[in-house]
Length: 316
Image (cartoon, rainbow, N blue to C red):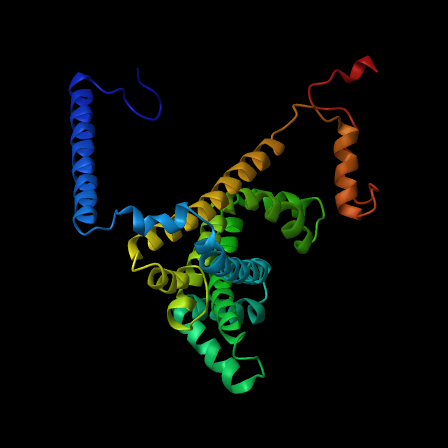
């Protein structure tokens, strides 16, 4: 059976796809067996190495939970600051005024081109030389600064692309009924573009969570991944087990973010569906008058209550 998107597969194509699938499964099983055999030969699957994570809470309360708290704290602060800042920068890049658009574009391109690790190191040196931030808090400040500067510039491009992806007719229709440019952006463009931008926004939030590990690797920020070395040393060099547990925690956090984003996107799309109600001419005039006057009046609005083309005027 064919559709408008693709042609139905024939018998030869179906057999070929079955062979490809079977071959992939065989290769995957071989890779998994090789990984299992290598770990088993090196004694990495012994129960003694995994026991601390399944027979008590000491490993979690002493090492994993404090690191996870710092990771979530740095990520949350970065998200709270980077999201609105990125939205403002993205909207500013669409400004009709060159004195706003050009400097903002230069700032966005500058911070988007610099690796986030360099921004963290620069922030740490800046706080060390020119501020009174305590040395214990300095890594957190540096990590948040680097994440905010880099991700706000990336989010600005996401916002700008999402708004530009909308049909120009949206803006033209809003301006035609008397809305100002800031009203067009706030009431028409942003609400519609949020749904389209949501997957990219959540992907960037996942990047923020993962990039907190850079602070632990370079700035001695005590985040989740940095807890692996002391934990593995205390429990007898169970490095593979420690990394596996930490990786599973990252998977749970990031999967929760993407699942929430999928649910929210579906909810927003359902809410935007039309109810099927037909507006009368007076309803349209009232809406247009509200937008044009800002007070619900109909001043400056065309009279839409007259006879519609196709009506039999002689009946009146």
